[in-house]
Image (cartoon, rainbow, N blue to C red; front, side, top):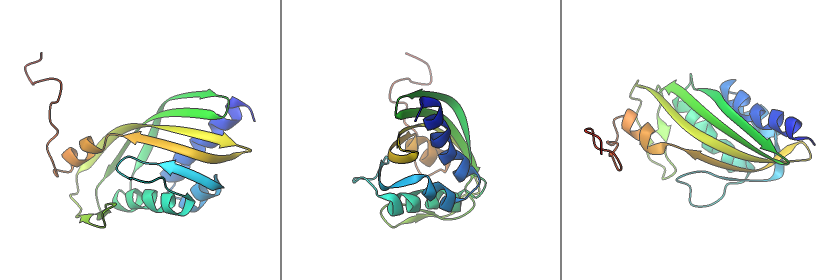
Length: 152
């Protein structure tokens, strides 16, 4: 498939999440699909990855992803995104704990590297700002690791 066709398939992932249709999202994935997500120590298969995204669709029922940039070359598609939503329901963590709803509006950014083969997504690497999310929810402070409020 062409880079443009692969780009459309990769972007369909975010469109499915925006529509809160994880069954459609799952249909885009190959049976041997593997994903790496921040904070998850092992790669996830198709079923577990759908569960990972279900946590966010549930906790942020108005979640919406905005595509900022897309680069495609061969089978790889890099999507830079920003997502926002209201924390209206419990957010399940990978440790089994939950974060009670804060009713706070949040916005985070991230990138998704997708590998497409034969019209299906076979591999996904997701990188996003988890610390910013936790800070916006009031769970933790976001440390100024590199820049103080006064500057350098």
